[in-house]
Each structure stands twice: as structure tokens, then as C-alpha cells.
Image 1 (spheres, rainbow, N blue to C red):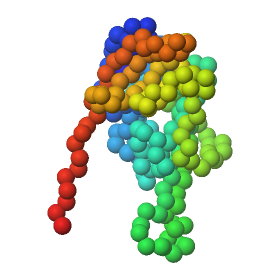
Image 2: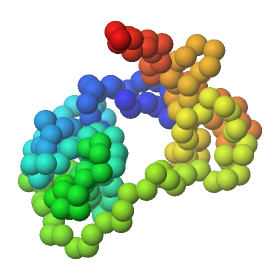
Image 3: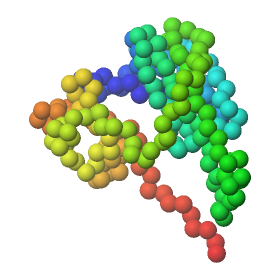
Image 4: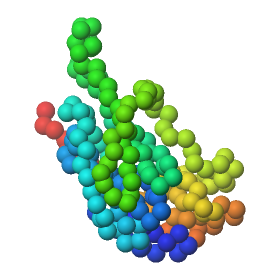
Length: 212
């Protein structure tokens, strides 16, 4: 979704199964899985949300690609002048039950990583040579993009994530009164909400009980 930062008006909406990676000039660089282990680099027009071009890239056959970061697959994006570099890491570990032998553990352990250089002006996507191994994944999560002063001033229980966009604090929140997932813009100085847009509604369905 693209929203007007001042008013919250929806400018455009793209289909599902797409992970935005970077906004550069007038382009949105994104990624989709089609299917794993193939990732597709997609470049959208930032003004309209329309696809400009797309190009598939094959990763190792055993990679479990996903749009969200997991311990098996994760992405990090860097911008370098007029290009975007997408760094990916794929790993596998033993997923059985009983304690395996050392050889089984060793055989089940795989790791691969690489970088894709994307010029929004047009393909092809450049596969960069490997430089150094990435660090082991952690469960600590990404560092906060908001200063401690701003965080302390917005201690609402329903806030799931927040970051500064220009001089506006943008929050992703789950409203306890309605269960709605919303995006809202807040004045970080006084804490007043400038606008709020509902993105989705949290499901209340539970998985059915299995018969004994």
C-alpha cells in the first residue's frame, strides 16, 4: 500500500505475496516467491504501483525461501546511490526428533548466501560474488528505528511496531476494542494521531480440534 503521509489517503494498493525491499527515486524494489527456491525481483512504479519489470533468480534447490524473515531464510537490503543490493541467507538444520548421529547432523547442515544488485532502470539483476559469510541469525529482532524519547512518549499497549518517516511517527497497531490492524500517523512531539487507516481485521478463528 502507498499512503499520503499528510492525510493517510490511499494512493495505490498492490496485490498480496509481495515483500517491499526498498524505495529508490521513483521506484519500489520488491520480491516475491515463485515458487521456492526461485525469487522474483519486481520493480514497481512508486507513483502508480504498476509493475515495471520482473526477473526471476534461482537460489539453491534446498533453500526454503519466504517473504518474512525466518531462521531458514532472511533478507537485508542496502541502497547504494542509484541501485539496491538485496543480501540473502539460506540455512538448514536437522529437524528430526530423536538425537541423531554426528554424521546426520553434519549432513543436514547447509548454508548459502549471496547478494543481488538491482538497478530499478531495468534488468538484468546482477548476482554479486560472495565476499564474506553473514553472521548467525539471532532472535533479538531488528533494532528500533525510533529514538528512546519517542518510544517512551508512545507507550500504547496496542502498538506492534513504529518508525519515523520524515517528521512523522508511523505506528502499526492492533486495536483491542475492535481487533482491527491499523496504520496511523502520530505527531511525535505531542502524541496526537493525525490519521488512522485500517489495514486488516485480526482473525478470531481457531484451528479445529483433532479427534482423539
